[in-house]
Amino acid sequence: MTTEPATPAAAPALTPTVLRDVVFAEPVGFRPLSLDLWRPATTGVPVVVFLHGGGWRVGSRRTMTPTMPGDGPFARIAAAGLAVASIDYRLSGEACFPAQVDDVAAALAWLRENGDEHGLDASRIVLWGESAGATLAALVALSRDDARAGVRGVVDWYGPSDLAVLAEDQGGLDDPDLREAGWLGHAVGADLDRAHAASPVFQVVSGAPPFHIAHGTVDGAVPASQSVALAQALLGAGAEAELTLVPGAGHLWQGDVDRDAILDAAIAFSRRVTS
Picture 1 (cartoon, rainbow, N blue to C red):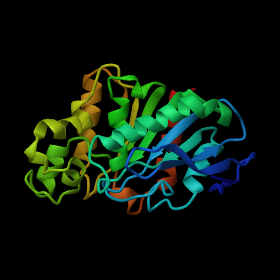
Picture 2 (tube, helix red, strand yellow):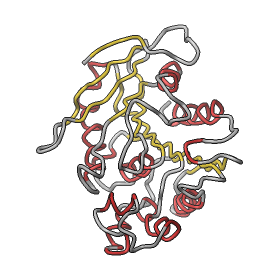
Picture 3 (cartoon, rainbow, N blue to C red):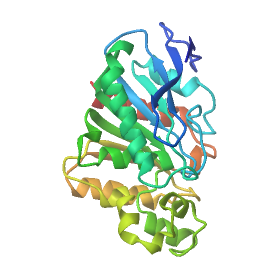
Picture 4 (spheres, rainbow, N blue to C red):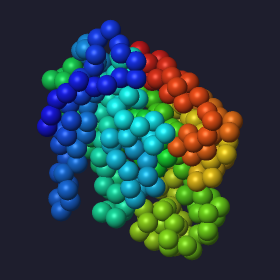
């Protein structure tokens, strides 16, 4: 576990610090799971829990998204007065659904138990995920148990919300090679009830926390219709959901897009719901 200065995109008045490689869970039979913690220079701050993408197969907590590399985006969030815990979760080659949801819940439990000593207010949490990580963020926020305690909002960047529809778009419900099939441990169509359990659009509840959903209009990996469907389900249940469709943006915010504006909008939402 190491501590070092973070490197923000633009230097704030008080530079955040980052505590790396903090083990938050040790699932029996698996590798230890760690987080990196960016901390503002103040105490009692809300926490953004960041969940990386990668189709549940690959990815790293070290990177927000390939088009926003390095520490800069995390340090920028911390410079806005929000701590960031960027976490590991087991990949689909290690364990199938719902292990990853359990890992996020374990990270939240660790924050609730240990947050005070790091200057964090774990009663004010935003789950922020991109792609596969956004699916996990949404599933935990929509859970019907204590796992979501303290979650005040969700930032969902281009996350799959309906695995069956996505599978049909990509190769078919019976295709065992799809990333969704790898996560479930079987072709999506082999057990639709289980696929629905892993699909946020089917888990929406009336007491859901606010969602900030953003998706590129030319995303070839996860169609924007996935986010439209989730936003409609949330609004239909009486929850707060703001949906931004970014013209010309592909998956991972590829293309000629204003990534700073996309990041700033998510930070502004996170500050609002945790204030």
